[in-house]
Image 1 (cartoon, rainbow, N blue to C red):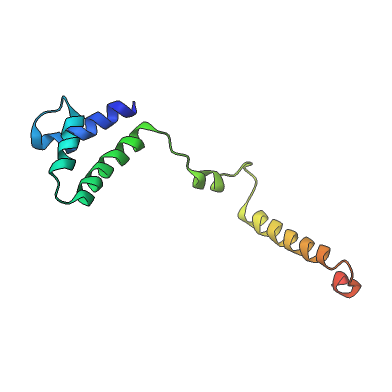
Image 2 (cartoon, rainbow, N blue to C red):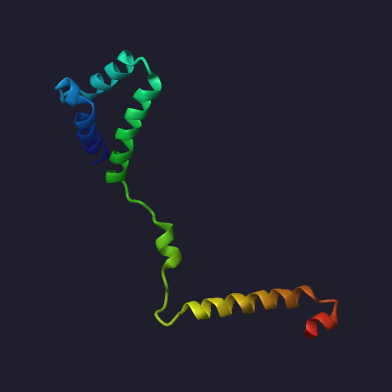
Length: 104
């Protein structure tokens, strides 16, 4: 699938100037050989490679998992309460040797 997408995008981006879509390797090689500015040639190839990868491979969206609620009854208020309780528990556990602080 990646090869197919890459060839299609290369033919659209590079071969439209040359008219030949059958040998994309030769077209890319000629772009690099003829280029006075190698950085521009690399940028053009990168602009071709990234869309091909995006179309071919699945993306793992970590942001969706972070916002996903595992149960329907869990609310933002419960999240805040849980954070507060965990902070208080940690504070209590750190005051093992000081009874005055533990009582507070």
